[in-house]
Length: 197
Image (cartoon, rainbow, N blue to C red; front, top):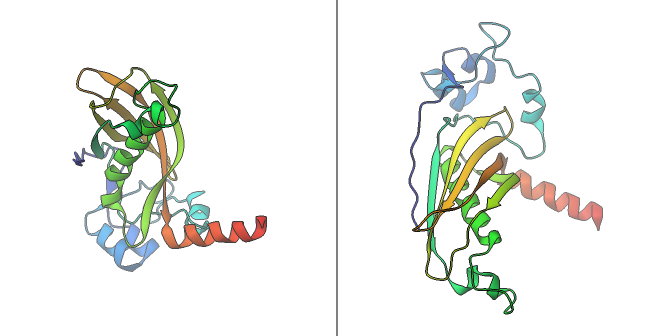
């Protein structure tokens, strides 16, 4: 398994100085020293956060101090084994690469694309999946999945994903991801467990 990164220029982010005075702290100061920040919408000295202000305070979703450039890319490869096939779950089914395992590999590629920009206990988690499995691959096939960041709406990252074997593309689609604090994420999950229990 390997990972590569290809960080393209980010067309949705701009450079500037105003963010430090609004957000404060080490990360904001670093951003203001020439790092990318969100475009101002309603004033030269104040970044527009609007509904994002609520996002900053949500239970586990996080505002990332380190902006992620559009085009950030992750790639992962795996060789198909019996455990990755339909036959591993039902011996009456053919030994071909399962859709579940293809999506899992795509999710890992997306995770690897975004993780270098996370800090402290931040990670990204999947929030939406829209995938087509277009061709079958058998045991021994080498599958390569790729995830490329296409857009960010202020809360969710949208990734274009593909999977290929040695001969052709076998799957494609879109994956949504969001940044969370592991600590807050687990606290919220445990809190929900207590409520439902």
